Length: 434
Ligand SMILES: Cc1ncc(COP(=O)(O)O)c(C=O)c1O
Image (cartoon, rainbow, N blue to C red; front, side, top):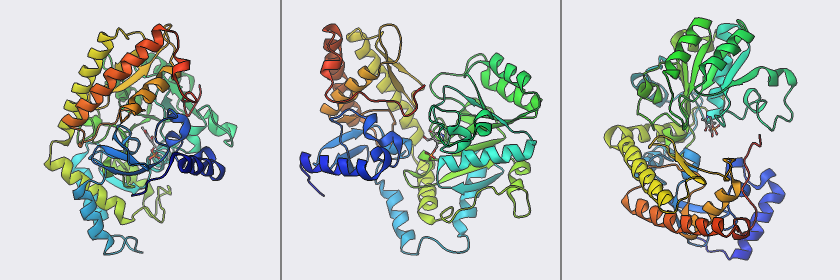
């Protein structure tokens, strides 16, 4: 374990910025997402903790941006990967694990009749788009405007505030509707008659589906000959082991999984109806997914080991019950400090979220920064809230104590009109600015 001085770490940070655009390979891990006192680098993790290069331990709520669902360096997962590595990792013919894991997913997930694996969520959502266009012969894509991310590929990035390098015709083919607004969806179908290949959406993000929204979405897509694709990259293995599609009782045509399915190792999956998926067969018209590392074995082994733990132990129950207690504890503190207009807690218990607001309701990045900064002082890294199976009573108590002290500091800053002055360094910025 290393122990670097503050000055050394600052030099590493500057070097990263000189060599790597944004200073980090994933935008949401970059400096501008965190308060300046947050650790710039993480050396290691164990369970629900991560450690910086000065030996400081934090309760981690980033968890590899939602990819670590059991806990860092989870023993059962590490043990199986280590065994596999001794046998080699990449070969020129498939391993038996591919078929075995595909079978497990088909048994589990309502929409799964065939499966293809990849490494990133982006790979599989983009593969779903290609399949939908080939299957329907239509070109337009509908996405939900409040859902922040589906892929690093052109079809999605072209619809964000950073569309540089993407041709106009691609940008114009992705259109948006708001969640829970079935009328807007209907009007897009009217505006683009017989042209919409798919609606790609997370079944849920924070707001509950209202007034049978998901059932109506399913019916509308079927009626219009448009494929319904559920991006379950966050919701899968969190709302329910069989996916949020099972939780809500809606079966999409295609769905995509990633993140939490392999406890931080690279594995993602597209699953769907055979009739659609088989367009990607060897003699089919779609080049579905094919890459050198598509079947490397650390990701697949990790995913299988992770699924075993999910099946044997109350992982999902813990996500829900921890989240429920966290939401209750945070809500009590909001009440206690009368912070209602400024801090809101939202979302399902298995994926709670905090949002920060000015008095007029606009989002406040300054308050968000102050929150992250004060929580870091109490050794809790909470720029988002990802709960894992390793988050237990000890973490809950430390977090709620941190929340209490943090809300006290925020209250004082608000009352004295010194929010900006209370922040050391820059205010966090969204990855996409709308
Ligand atoms: C809902 C959702 N879909 C897709 C993706 C893309 O996954 P990846 O970053 O693994 O490419 C993300 C990543 O943040 C996501 O949150």
